[in-house]
Amino acid sequence: MSLFIGLSSLFSCKDKDEPILDFKLSQSELSLIVGQSQDLKIESGNAPYTIKADEHFSAEIKGKVLTVKALKCDANALKATPVVLMLTDKANKKQEVKLNIYNKLDISMQDVKLYEGQTADVRINAGKLDAFKLSVKDESIATAKIASEMIGEVELKKILVTAKAKGETELTVTDGLSTKTVKIIIKEVKPITLWGAINGELKQVDNYIIKAGEEYGFVIKGGTGKYIFDYDKEQLIVGEAMEHGDDYIVKVGISKELTKSQDVKFKVSQDGNADNAIEITIKADVPKQAFSCKVLSLGKTLTPSKDKDGDDVYEVKAGEELTIKLIGGTGDYYVKKSTGDELIAFGAVADDLKAGDVQWGENKYPSYLIPSGMIHIKNTKANTEFGDNLLVTKIIAGGTVSKDSKWITIKVK
Image (cartoon, rainbow, N blue to C red; front, side, top):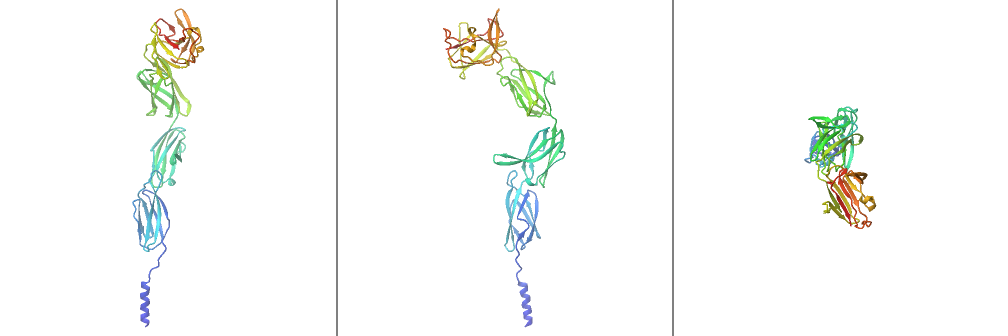
């Protein structure tokens, strides 16, 4: 009897079920960069364990250690791909681990060239931002920090590199998995000078001759590479400053609007520092043209009639506006005061006029000098002071009036 009880007790202990344990992990969330691995500890559970497969990560269990490796991130820039790692133990208990998978470190530049005092943006294209570490080898030359930039409702991150002094140094960026090195070159800001080819040799210039229909590339030395060009658009055609080795080139041509040879000014200044500037005189070489004019009213070009001497006559109604563009001829342009009276007395307004005299034979006549070659006239009323109802403005080319001068008559109705 005692033997049977003893055997029965032995078999009962062997068949007794093992206790079911709680399933616990040391962490429920991980942030990883593609290529990075991290371990979690299985604090309690019922081995063996199964892992639900996913293309974004790999995972394996050795003993009580779960090792997770990030393989793929679908998101752009600094955003993470959120995925879930599902573990199931022998007792069918489940645990989830939330994974935030980031792309590998990627920044937009491998080298930065700046001038003293400038700041450059180095875009952060990808990486785990809270793991970033920045260091500049020589902070007396440059410094760096991470900053934000809003594009619409999207927040982007960048590295601001600020130039301190002339020299070269390195910026090191790491996200804990990979490291990028950015070369920083700081240049000294020098006074701006302009250079041109003279007798086949590049020399600094303060004046230069450019022929109409041609363009010339001036070499800009000094400044910061960001320039402001000051010039008259009716006189010059100026392109953008293009990098050329350590210097810059800007192409300058004579505008088609320029109808006679003259000196024109061209100024180059440093953007953000107007004191660092240079101005040169460009001698615009424009072939001589026969004296003529183009008359517009309400945006339309008027066709003149001819008087008995063959000169042009334009008719304009009271209240209409005229724009007269003088072309060609020799010397300066003048408007003769009609019948010795002031032009303004007849309701005409002319821009850029200067009082002066012109010589016709042995006589001088009071006239208006037109330096720009452009005159704008608005007639507010018809001329009722004279029986023939005419307002005559005689536009001539040349400081001395000769029998060969071109005369243009404006007739107000």
